[in-house]
Image (cartoon, rainbow, N blue to C red; front, side, top):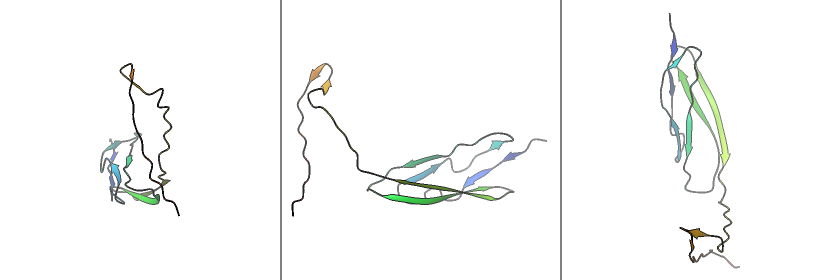
Length: 99
C-alpha cells in the first residue's frame, strides 16, 4: 500500500508582496517537498510571519519566516562600465535633504 501526503498552504499571501508556491501538492512516502517563498517589497521593511501548511489526515505545520529588506547598495565604477566593448556616459542623481 502506497501512502502519499497532500500538503496545502493555507494562506499563500500572508502579506502584500510575499507569495508562497506551490499552494498544494503531492508528496510520496519518503519524499520531500519544496516551498518557494518570493518577496517583492515596495518599501524597506522588517517582517516576521508564519506560513501554515495543512497536511490532510494529519496536522498543520507552522513555518516561521522573517527578514529585513534594506536599501540596495550599488557601487559602479563609471569608467569601467562598458557596453558592447564601448564605454558610454551616464548621469546619476541622488535625492538629498538638508535641514
